Image (cartoon, rainbow, N blue to C red; front, side, top):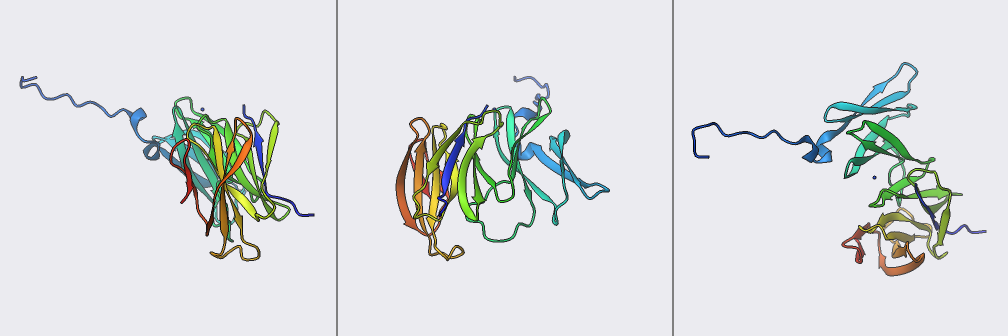
Length: 238
């Protein structure tokens, strides 16, 4: 029996005098997250790794991980208001991954020094996007040796699942991206047969209206492409 690529959705619980000019101090809060966020890794005696998450040089929290062969890469994903999101991936993953992403995703509130693991994937699962409200996380994964596409809760307190089937002609589905207003999710689905690591793929672009639970195929193109929203209504494969 063939297992179709599917999409799953869980709901979630983010003057003029000679006086010297006054030089205003830079507001740290206005700095881009890319300049504030940093991390450091320490290898412990048992081989495990402690990852320290830093914001403007101050520790927000730590993450304990088992030591893989090449350590971990830590990357800032985005900042939304008082919160920022970052990924932790195993370094040096080999092989061809059609729809990749982040293995683990964390949310931090630097001002409150809060750090929460909002997604921890099993091997082969990758986060692809977080909705604008921070309430939904889209991820792609492999199951039964076939690619499966999911949406899950950022904080897994609600087990409600909504499933969206992809036509059986497609061999893989993933790369989900939320529209700026969070009302839609676009994803790609590919036909590659036995040639997954070639340029001979056909990629379909689909949009799920999360308010009506309808799925619409937008286009179908040769080759592969990344899902890119240009505005709340326009999405393309780039």
